[in-house]
Length: 132
View 1 (cartoon, rainbow, N blue to C red):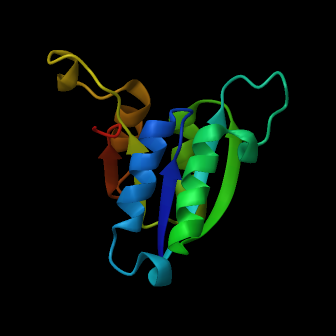
View 2 (cartoon, helix red, strand yellow; view 1 turned 180 degrees about the vertical axis):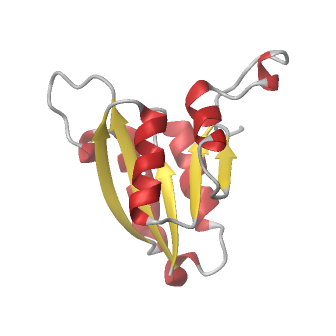
């Protein structure tokens, strides 16, 4: 079983692109298990991962494609938690999303994405938001 950690923030467009990337992998519905991770930085209402719109977007797509997944929530610094969970679960790949940036800003990834890429020896796939 090939295990993928999908680090999902609150942006539904980026989450949809991440879900599509996994669904497009060979034998996704047979050989891939996904850990859908959302890291709460501030959560005064005490929301759970299943209440996050972007997570629901991902799980609906995975349900449609019959892809096995597990929801994992954490609190703290997103990059640190993604790397920690990836190590604990010994995943084969990490998928995070990038953000639209100006041409100059494209030289650098966002801080979370960059920290994940530089903080692991596992393959990291980055996806952007959907394009029209």
